[in-house]
Image (cartoon, rainbow, N blue to C red; front, side, top):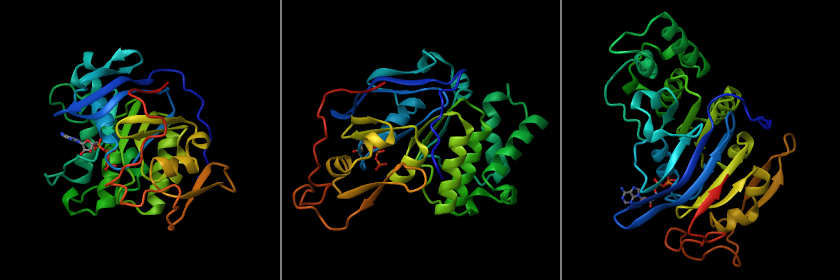
Length: 294
Ligand SMILES: Nc1ncnc2c1ncn2[C@@H]1O[C@H](COP(=O)(O)OP(=O)(O)OP(=O)(O)O)[C@@H](O)[C@H]1O
């Protein structure tokens, strides 16, 4: 998968996180996060466990109200839209998508059409065609009549991705969409996201796949944005060391030229914490009370 820089797309779909802060029970989970996702571009949100990535995405899909700040779509505060208007604009694939009813795969994907169906109108032929196309793009047509509860984790993940695509929104936000997927399906999903030319904000743990697919990468650490920019500027040995607490050598991909991190299992005495990183977090690169990338 080689990365082609996405030219900003004209038309709707520019997303802006504007000074988002989240404090829960005195804990500051997110500190003044400002991040632009231009229309048609893919921005990757990376960071260690617990750094605030899901918290940021939950503010975008309004599962969580920020303590301060706002999320703007083409300059309009998402809080001013009705839930249906928001669902026509932003599709989310979250870690929380609880599937506890044994709907069939095609029924689950068809839920993505709900924001477009007034009242209780059943999906029409056009809606069904959109769902079939989404299922085909995710390679799950053969599962159409299976119950979602009987699927493997990776199959279910692809169903949720198809549902998000079927929603036909200009903006997609995805929280670790490659969870449970084998490497072929990880690459296929990320290439698909890139090729949609939608506005995409995606949380990823695999920094090398993030480098391959993202126009820009934003790095969160302890709720603070500590770096943001093109992969080649952000994914450095220093970022690996100071944010993730690992030693890595960064080399250009021989075909695409994007940075790839080669990790070392040996601790670097000068750079990595001796104790477990969870017990002794590494300070962010640029400690700051606010985070901005625009
Ligand atoms: N309701 C809550 N009350 C208190 N702390 C919370 C609450 N929700 C989340 N947190 C804490 O906020 C921090 C950020 O959580 P978040 O889920 O955003 O991290 P993340 O970067 O997505 O992590 P991961 O990579 O593990 O998915 C974590 O330390 C988490 O325990």
